[in-house]
Length: 221
Image (tube, rainbow, N blue to C red; front, side, top):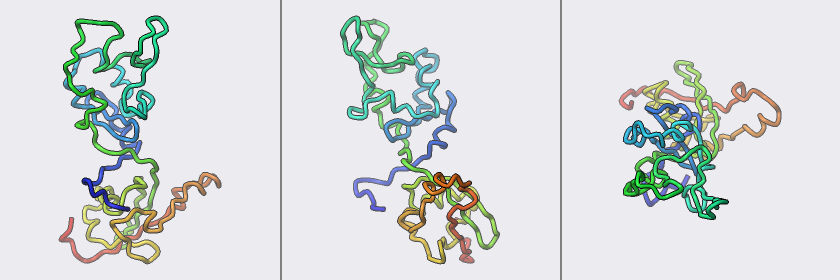
């Protein structure tokens, strides 16, 4: 995987990770390929009725709210006024102006939340996959969900909650040491999901396995 010379690599998230943040006190959403943590936004506007449409979609993908070309809220022509208005079928939400002039609407908030990068925390994976990781020392066998875009270092980070010394192991596949800067695919670890779907197989029984070999050095954690 080529490194982005313009800045640090983004963090990738699976849809399952986004969906686990589904309450008003811990609210993530995804849209147009990115993941947003709106917890602070909800805190700042606590008690505002305009939060309801946002809280109702906590943990979900809301790309259908936005125009993929402009990254702005979708609009429509009002059949009565013939004005161009934001399309909010689930109700008006924070930073959306009312359809008619109102003294109650403060438009001095600056950047609307859906364009404010302070809420953006990463990228939504375009393709997730499961991988089996087998520790040949302890025989611990763990299946984890990863993002296809992640390199092996990032997959190692996901695995640390199962083995805090995972960096002190050599990671191999088919007897070959893996390049930790590359993705699973770049390390020639095939994604068999398409075949599993076609054959209607339980893919967790036939997953590709990465083997961990102990280096006899626990200085890395």
